[in-house]
Amino acid sequence: MADKFNKQEDWPGDGYALARSLVDLILISIETRDSNMLDALLEPLHPADIADALEQVSSSQRESLISLWSNFDGAILSELKESVREEIILSLAPQILKEAVRDLESDDVVDLIEDLEHSQKKLVLDALSDGERIAVEQSLGYPEFSAGRLMQREVVVAPEHWTVGDTIDYLRGSTSLPDQFYHIILVSPAYHPTGYVALGRLLSSNRKVRLVEILEKNFRTVPSFQDEEEVAYAFNQYHLISAPVVDYDDRLIGVITIDDAMSVLGEEAQEDILRLAGVSSDASISDNTFETVRQRFPWLAINLGTAILASVVISQFEIILTQIVALAILMPIIASMGGNAGTQSLTVAVRALATKDLTRSNLWRTVRREVVASLINGFIFAVFMSFIGMFWFGIPLLGFVIGVAIVINLAIAALAGILIPIGCERLGVDPALASGTFVTTVTDVVGFFVFLGLASLILI
Image 1: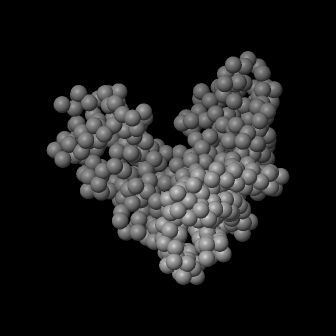
Image 2 (image 1 turned 135 degrees about the vertical axis):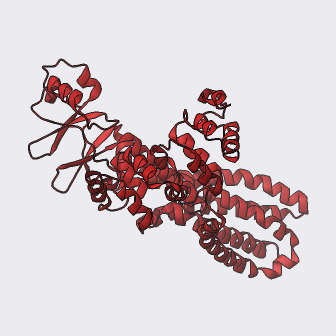
Image 3 (image 1 turned 30 degrees about the vertical axis):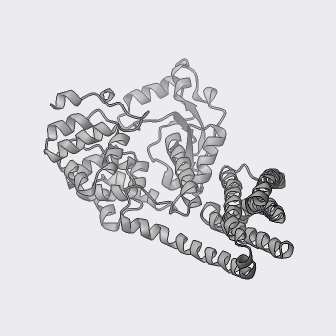
């Protein structure tokens, strides 16, 4: 039966997503304890696809899969979500864990163990050779989210005086090259990186050509203490493929490659999306109920407090609300319009701050654009709502009140959506984490105050 399932192309999915039919067959092989079928299903899959499959099944099913599968690939550990990864590590037999970790580059091992509990971290470190363990421990000595944590120690270097022929002979004779590398880094006698040569340029050049004659023009080094988000920005901004990492004395200690830099960019974008929704950046679909409650409760509690503040504003207009019930019916429109407008400006601002597109030179131009756009939208919707207010409730001035309130609230929402995340960043607070709640509070409080305040002045 297993022979029928040995081709990955047999599994139609949604683009590159793992096909549900494949996951179902994996579950069948687990339930029937058919290790041959499981091996045949998993063998052609990419480690990322196997990681997806492990994250889609239950904890008990994961444990059964690990016990049945005879060829666990260490690269899978690098693809797993943190919570699932810890569980898998505890499920692996020591010898299997040792073999799995041995196949990983040093940066993948660091990423694997930096967030593990002490006992789990010891399991992984004990699986490494002495040299590998020392390299990993040195990387762990750098600050979290720094280039020193992100880099890999496996580097291909050459002296400045070498020729293309010298380098090719060295590469052919070496038994310890990284699985993937893109440049040969030239170093001085003091081990300072002075440039690098792309592999394509190396292989297309005559053997007698000196390496210094075919250096890449786009050469940059990265300090080991540099924040990884800044490193990822440099890779994206300057189209880097790899970059040497140097210590405080400018000596070469490692290299960062584009896959790791792009992974950081992806994580940052994901964090921004989750935090804008008031969800922890560590949230995952595989989290249990308790973890989900723990992550979401604080921001829900803050949101409750801001909602109470808006209710306090509303309570100040209790008399007019009892006299003109239509105001209570129209209030959600004010809150919804302001909240949506604020979220639109906020999303643009947070992303622009993350990509460094929003700077002092274009700040006020951006603020002016957002406010003017909101005012134009506000006037359009104000005219529309004026007619609704007038014909729905038969109170012409009510249409005027709601129209003016929408215009003012949308303008305030645009200002808040831009200025609040900028203020958060200046205070050292993550704009994506804190801005959403404050922008919503401003639009609710201002919207209700303007709407009900105008109604009190004009309609009574």
